[in-house]
Image 1 (tube, rainbow, N blue to C red):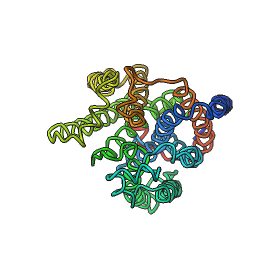
Image 2 (image 1 turned 180 degrees about the vertical axis):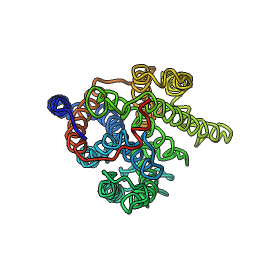
Image 3 (image 1 turned 60 degrees about the vertical axis):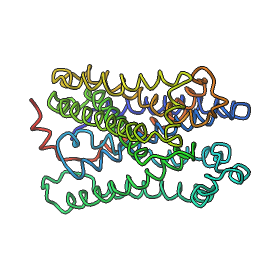
Length: 393
C-alpha cells in the first residue's frame, strides 16, 4: 500500500517531542526524588501501570483480532502492534519499582513481617526474591508473545485458511491465556500487595478490563488522526467507526460488570477484612473519585455509545475515547494511591502532588516516542485488506 510521505514526517515530529518532553519531565522527577520519596512512589506506580496497561491492552487487542479476525482489526493492526512493541521500554521503566520495592511494600520489611501474622503466613510468596524473579518472568513471557505475534502478523496473503493465519490464531489463543495468567500474578505483586491483608479474586480481571477499554480508545484516537493520510483516508469509514464504537461499548460494560460484581460480593459478605478496601476508598475525599468513575467511566459513555449516530461520528467518538482514557488514570489512582495511606495518616482530602503529573508525562513522553518509532516501521509492512474494502460505505 502507498503511504503518504507526510505521515512519516508527522511521526518523526511526535517522536522527537516525546523524547524531549519525557527527558525534561524525567529529569525533574530524578532531581526531586531524594527529597520527595513518599510522594514519588505512589505517583510513579500509578503512571507506570497506566502506560503499561496501554502496552498490554494493545497486546490483548491484537490477540483478540488474531483469534476472531474481522475488518475492524485489520484497520488498527499496525497501530496495536506498535503499541505492544513498547513493552521492552516498560521493562526498563520498571527499574525504579524494582529497586524501590522495599520502600513501597510493607511485606518487604522484615521487621513488619515479624510482627504481622498475616504477612508472616504470606511470606512464602510475598518476598523480594520472588517479586524480582516473577517480574523478570512476566516481561519475558510478554515479549515472547510479541515476538510470536510479529512472526505470524497478517501480510498480503488473501487466504484466511493459510498456514500463517492458522499459526496466528494458535499463537493468539495461547498468548491470551498466558497474558491473563501472568498479569493476574503481576496485579497481585504490584498492586494488590500494597494492602496484603486484603484480597479479591476479581481484582486482576478488573484491571485487564480497564486495559482493554484504554487500548481500544487509544487505537481509535490514533486511527482517527491517521485518517488524514493514505491509506487510512480510504479505510477509516463510518462502518468501521461504528464497529469500534460497539467494541468500546462492550469493553465499558465488561469493566463495569467486573467492578460491580467485586463490590457486590464484598458487600454481601460484609467481612471486616474484605470491606476495609472499599471503606478506605469511600471517605476522605476518595468517594468523589468513586462517584466520577461510576458516572464517567460507565454511565455517560454507556448512554452515548448506544447512539449509532455518535458511533459513526469520528469527532464525537474521539471525545468519548479521550474521556475514557482520562478516567482510566482516575481509576488507577483511586485503586493504587490509598494503598500507600494508613488509616491514621489519611487526610481530609485526596493527596495530589505535582509528581502525579510529572511522572505520567515522563513515562508517557518516552512511551509515545517509542510507539511512533515502531509505528513508522510497522506501517511499511504490507497487509491484505479485502475486508476493508467491504466497509467503504
